[in-house]
Image 1 (cartoon, one colour):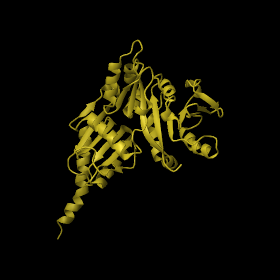
Image 2 (cartoon, rainbow, N blue to C red):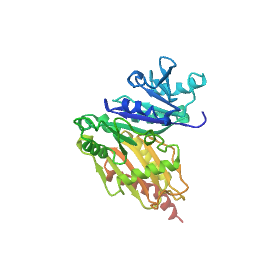
Image 3 (cartoon, rainbow, N blue to C red):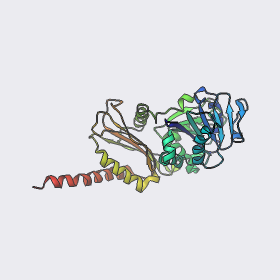
Image 4 (cartoon, one colour):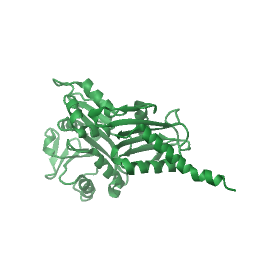
Length: 343
């Protein structure tokens, strides 16, 4: 497989409705060439889709999609998929969907996907979909740090169970918006969401990626403040930064690397459009310690050429981030000024 294969991560707290959503997605023809990795194949309602059993780990569905049980480490499973295709045990596939466990932290999965040389050469993180329970979201947001992190790193949040007794979709939506003001929030219709709204989020296509980043920037704001999520979100908040003058990419890259080295565990997501002096912007996208290779666009997606960055962080003040950038910029420029003053 020469082109990298897009991988979608489906996460959400225990009982949120991930399995129901996945069962509905498997009906969609957009996933006909996909491999779906699940923790327990028996939990997914597949009986009406089942075409043939390949082995104890794998079934092929009548839609063409392949479902595999995660029996070992996810990294090993992803590596094994390639080998199984070459051995003729699986058909060639064009997409991977991974359902995590309800208590899983999605960040290490994404970080491994982007940093492991073998995986990075074969797979690209296409997006994170988080399923939120419309009934139990207030309790989970207050008591479960995993809930907050799953929502905070998501590109799409699916609000499930809104039609059940006791559901409070307005409160659940407000909690999601507080934890991640930039994500797209989609209400499920009895567990159903069109697959086109959850896959193909633009990580492999620079123009789509720029549109996704711009939507994040527009949702968070122009950088005049931060979005405080309150005590129930354990210090997680969104920072919006804006720089009207072009950025020195080398300087900014060093600063970002130092920030992630020092506080990477507390920088959950980074997205931005940077003016580095070229005709088009540099698209920035990262998860905790790992930053996707920046993509350079030929033109800006809108008329605003200012550098704009969104960081979803935990217990990091906006003033501290801005002060550190300013200090690093002064340090980076000091040798140039000193040299200019010499005879």
